[in-house]
Image (cartoon, rainbow, N blue to C red; front, side, top):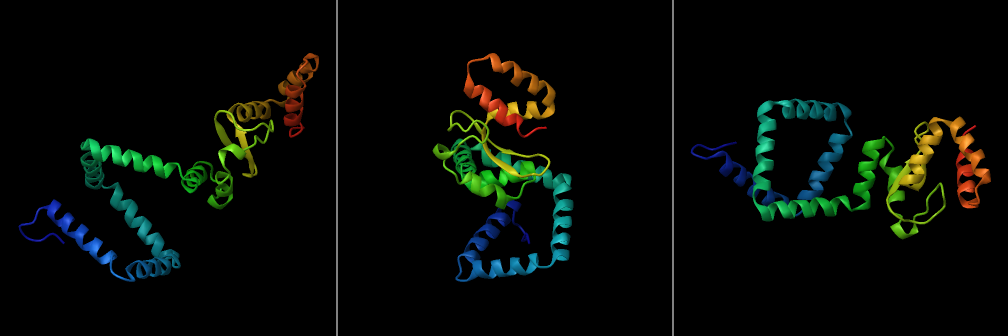
Length: 196
């Protein structure tokens, strides 16, 4: 609560200092985790919290306060560099990548995480069976939501095009019989085996 003759910034700073001191007490973290566990065990309480947070964050004054806070943080060049470096370091972690992938695709985090723990030099394309070169994507079946494995961007886009028009893809494969590249022919035939 804001005290008399105290600015908002002073009130926030006082709360920040108090919170830091409280969290540094022995057992504070364990108490907080136990409390969060109890709250999460009751869905009706979590639903109330989500509804309150959604309504609070939708207010124009809340949005403006968040924007002002972000602008103030980014105003100092050294703080901006530090924030960007922290964000980049976080996004480089396998669990952060798996969370982002799960959020974008709807696949569970638990299913995606093991794939992101595979080192870059040990990744093999699930389509052409070639090792890493260039950019990768984690390929999945859009119907069953099952992860197929790592794939080169070019292989994944080719698979998507073949899935959309299998007849045209079969015609291309048949015309490839006159080519000398057996690798390309085997790759295409292997992809077409997935489509009737």
